[in-house]
Every structure is written in structure tokens, then in C-alpha cells.
Length: 205
Length: 198
Image 1 (cartoon, rainbow over the protein chains, first blue to last red):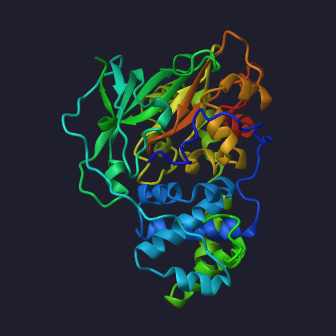
Image 2: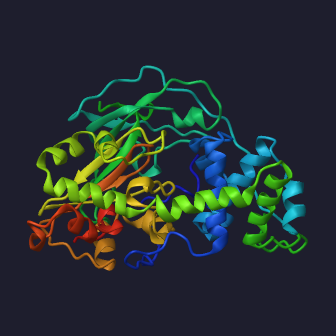
């Protein structure tokens, strides 16, 4: 989905609040929440693609104003409801107020047919796919051409894995794009490397 | 839901929402306090940059190890007794040189090799870093205190798959000849993310 989470290259954001060796946590509830989330992963209540997709399904205004751990909290609570662990009514009763959850999921998809194997140095193009469900192709590379740098071992295909759709594991390719080619006259020169699943790629025509 | 819809009850505070999940777990026979104690201990004692710092120090002092690390990061960190979660099937180590600066990000969420380089800092997970670093890398690094010479090529790595990255910083010339333990002390998480040089 072309969600609010897909931030790469968006303009208008200000300075990064950087301090050397900044902390990961700011409040005790963040530590507790991170522990609960880690246990849910360990128990196999959901997989990482389901977790990420539930964050992406947050109402956009909620997403933009929530900090990282509130996004984790919303995903954990939403997946718990969707998998029948608890209900939203129970959570709201126990919380003593409204407990905003993510919006329902759309459909997933399985691997693309006719996937190609690429080698380092191959020129590839990212397919212009638009999908309603989870996808790990950042919008800024859609339809763009780049050069394969390396191949990874096979991973579960996120578009299927987030939706309990059957699929085979497939490799990802580190593909190198030129920032100034992607955003002509409006970017700093850099090589931007993205881990792109095989299903998202085709040979450059 | 529109923010101005006053007919809706108030959103519960964050700690109350976390408390609700803890209470729901407890009602199902789980012990949230024990879970939190165990996992918080991981965050405090395990998911720390000192692991990655050991890896970097070893790579600086042992050329054969450096070669193995760059060829297969996962196998090389495992040699030192370090672990990655099972879903991080691959660790790619990115070597900085006098003319190459690698920098890691995750534009879609906030992924990192947290068991090796430590849990990500707040700014890494902020919208500003995620939106800007792929497009305005040199400007962003300068704002963060890393003013690179024009001839230094910047390579940004967007963690969009479950493959994980860490940057192998350049060893400062002043530390040549130091032992591994002393070297590990000077390696920071920010240098392994690639937003700082040592």
C-alpha cells in the first residue's frame, strides 16, 4: 500500500533531533512495551511482516503523531485483536479510555510469476506495481532503474507473509540507484542501495 | 477518525494502554512482570553497541577476520559468540574508506541489526531521518556534525528487507598498534550506523 509510512524522499521535514549516543528509550512504559512485543514475536503470535504491516495500516494522522513505541503498541494491540487474543472492548475497558487500533488489512499477493535471477552488475528496473496490501518496495524506487550489487539468501515474500498467503521464499537484491537520477536537481549526490525482493524486479528493457 | 470529533471518548494515555495489554496478558495466565524483567535485561545488557564494537576492533587488528567479516557478516559475528535473530538471515558489513562513507537507514520502518550494533537511537526512528537521509544525505550528515569532504562518496543503505547492515568504520590513525580491547572502547553505535566517523 502507498501508505503514510513510506517516507523516503518526502520533503518538508526539519532537522534531525540528533545527539551523540542518544537513548533508545525515554519512558518506562516504552521498555515494558518493547518487552511485551518481543515476547509476542518469540511466541510466534505474529511474524515481522504482519507486525510492520499493522503499523502501516494506522490512520495517517495517528501514525504521524505517534512516536516509534506508540506505533509498536498499536501494532501489537491490533494484531492481538485480529488473532483473537483479546478484543478492542477489553483493551479499552482495561485502559479506561479509547485505544486506537490500525485499520483492517486488504488482500496480499503471492510471488510474481516469471521471476528472474540476477547477477552483480545487471541493470534492472523496479516493476510499477501498485498493491493494496503489504509491500517492501519503497515508493521512491517504483519504475526506476538501478544496478544489482549483490544477492541475498531467500527470505519469506513480505507481500504474502503479512497476509498468510502461500508463497515461496525468494532472494533480495541490493540494487544501487543514483539519488540525483531519482530526484534530478533536487537531491544530494549519493548512491542509494535498496534491498529489493526478486518479485519487484525485471531486467531493464 | 477525525481529530475534531468531540463525541468520542478521550484516548487513554500511553502507559494506560500498555497497562491494558499487561493486564490482558495476566488474565490469560502470563506473568508480564517476569516478561518485562527478562526482556528489559536483554535491552540493558545484550542489545548493546559493545558487541559490534568488538567485531570492529577485531576486524581492525586481524586482516584475515576482516576478510571473513566482509565476505559473510553473520558467520563472522557468530565466531565471536554473537547472535542475530533467526529472521535476520544475512548481515552485510559495509567498509568505510577515506573516500567512501556508508550510512544505514530504514525509510519504511526502523530496522537495524540491533543485537550487534545496539537498539536504534531515537533519531534513527524519527520521521525526519527516515524521510531525508536517502535524498539529502550530505546535508543531513552535515547537520548531524559529520561534514564530509566533497570527494567522499556517500552510500546510503535502506534496510527494506530482513537482511541487516553494519558499517565498518575506518580506524583512526592515532590508534594504530592499539590492542583489541582498547580499540573496542572507541567504537560507537553512531559510527556503525554511519553518521559519525571516529
